[in-house]
Length: 154
Image 1 (spheres, rainbow, N blue to C red):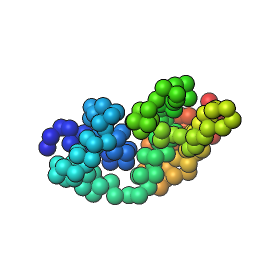
Image 2: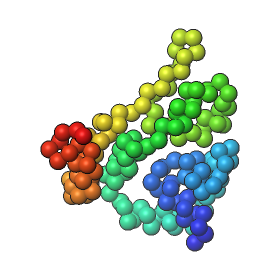
Image 3: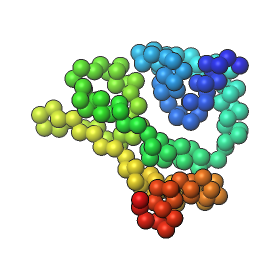
Image 4: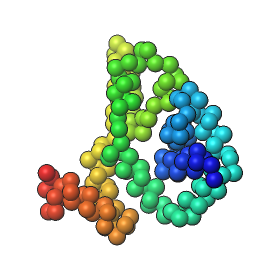
């Protein structure tokens, strides 16, 4: 299997974002959507995605990946948007990773407001789901390393 298709399939499987997955395989922002569609519909990518889906068919694993992205994902693109929105094109914005953004609003005199999903709540939800996700192992260790064994924060 071609390395690019396999890499794209893995990123797409975990991110569920066509442009982002294509960017991780080296596509420039302006070509990421077209390249992503091309890669997504290749036989090699479809085979790799099928293999990944069969190995990880548990719905809770999708929830875990989403919560992990909220809890630990970068907000660099959103910050860039706040400081440089006037100079960005729609294509620039389409290429950004705004997964952690819950709301974007322009108010008042062209004031851009961005609200993020709550990382603390995502961590708490990961802790609640830990026994169902992995028997409590990996997620429990993560939560304990953040909050301490008795639940107190560091």
